[in-house]
Length: 356
Image 1 (cartoon, rainbow, N blue to C red):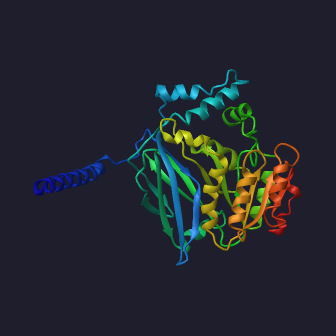
Image 2 (tube, one colour):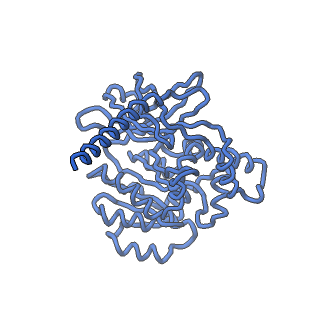
Image 3 (cartoon, rainbow, N blue to C red):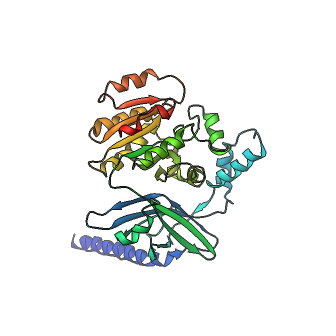
């Protein structure tokens, strides 16, 4: 019996020693980003620290743009349409689908320059994503307050990759906005049209929404854009949104063709919106939120549920009627929350943004 116990202890010690050796050896796997690799930075937030200064979060991805995986090409070809209407659609398709074929790189160390400093992020995970945070003083943030974003960059050989964190104002409403069929025409209820609008066609702004969002920003609003689309589409969304919409923090889905994240693309949009928006609301106690979405999928139900859980925080819910007249389901939802909370619209100019 004693021998058995000693044997177990020896095995346990050996396992622990092996684990420590592996952890030590793994540090040698970490490497800086190479010249042929790419970094994508996603917009995050810069929040005032109660003790002084600002906490700036960083989030990005490192990948190799090589697309030589036969398996990934085969999977993406399954959604390729039988016909492409124009050379531009073919170009868009090839460019956007390539974003799903890259090799995400783990164990990469990203160094960046922000406000004159050189800082290191956490090492990338197996999906190529990395995170970090930087504390900046009021003086360091001061030059960027007018623009509303804090820029940073990472230089790899002769290439420079740029990103920014959005300064969340101390006051004013926080806008949480959907993307598809809210600020961008997607036609999400028609899967064939959704595929074309996502992968082939030039992205089109929802009529009236760019000017409306600019008016909200002029009243001191801060923005979060929440989408069930995968992070791979962010570069294309950014190219579309940057010139016409205010800067905002993005929240999108983790997705890889080759692992379990693949199924997350088909996750119930209601559950995804709840689990993504609720932490944002909880992070700003005492602040007022406006939730903006559309009638096409589950935005009304998800937003009303958030309003039920945080009635003091959700001031307005604005739902764009993406497919005509107000559905009966939205009329029923109005009766379940405080009066004058949920409003529908076809033209955003009919909304009373001055009341925020």
